[in-house]
Length: 436
Image 1 (cartoon, rainbow, N blue to C red):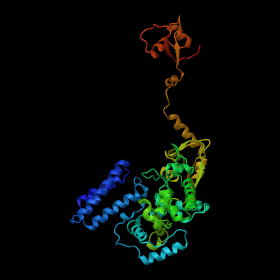
Image 2 (image 1 turned 120 degrees about the vertical axis):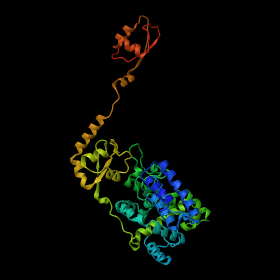
Image 3 (image 1 turned 180 degrees about the vertical axis):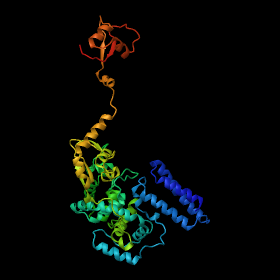
Image 4 (image 1 turned 30 degrees about the vertical axis):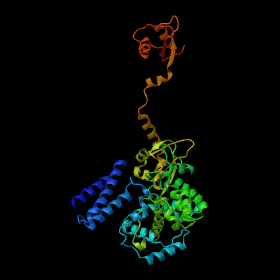
């Protein structure tokens, strides 16, 4: 392997071990520059086609797997489609399969050459990542389907969460959109997703799904078309209205696509492609990994005081990573207790009985840990008791000290006095132990 490629591999390896955002951003920018440089030098036969394919593969791997990369890297834009010559399926077969899907969904899954390129690109370059995605889907999709059905939204809308976040519950984009359904702070607040120092409900799979259902229902009411509702979910209803107007009044997604923001132009095809790949996974020899949990293997229990993940882990022997996975809305790995809130912890079902049996022990540990924390020294509480005393005729330090139950030396110290002389009208700071 060429020395440059060895350096590149080391750089990507270090990057993938979780560097700070700024460092990661610099590295990925550097890699993209190097990639372009290599493509230019390849014309001079410095690097083989095999080398270039390796570099492409490494870059795609980082985009899909790193939590430091904007989740919308899952979406592939027209200009980013590489190696168009390789096909995972023929146009004729894709037309037949899309027609079958179209008969069973309210989305408009008609064949389109641009969609074909996206599907082929995903199958050629991203196929190996779908087993892990499908394993996550086995946990999240039953939860999504329950609420989608409740709000009368097509069940296929569950694939939107893959496009939005690749099913990473703590995903956060560079613009601040957060959670499985990528809500911005303002939009989340509009749909009752609360954010505090301890809790961000945009990361809560159930609450965020309900909010997404409410939002999608509103968008469908506006446009009367699920494809346009999808586009509006990404770019906002205003941009979709503008695209309809600029297109001359067309309302089919493909007809207004050239007038949408570039990100949205790739967004809906990414949704269609994901739906196709999940529905025809076996035909492409794609099989799900085993999920860590199925949703029915978990349950919740309300807490009666503030507790942390590490305290739960210590008492009932459940891995903190499992707790973080099942409870992504708790930002600091702490479950707060507030009287007007019913915060709960989600646990593997097998641990619920252990939690209830050892609940008092858990709360005792939390209380003991609180007691170990450093407290403010008593002398600093005295600051709240300070008064200002105005010296009167006949006053002297001993008289004032006796009046408030303090020492003369203390009065001199509090007021930085070098002598015991007083002046009528002089102001003294006193921290009284008794009031006259």
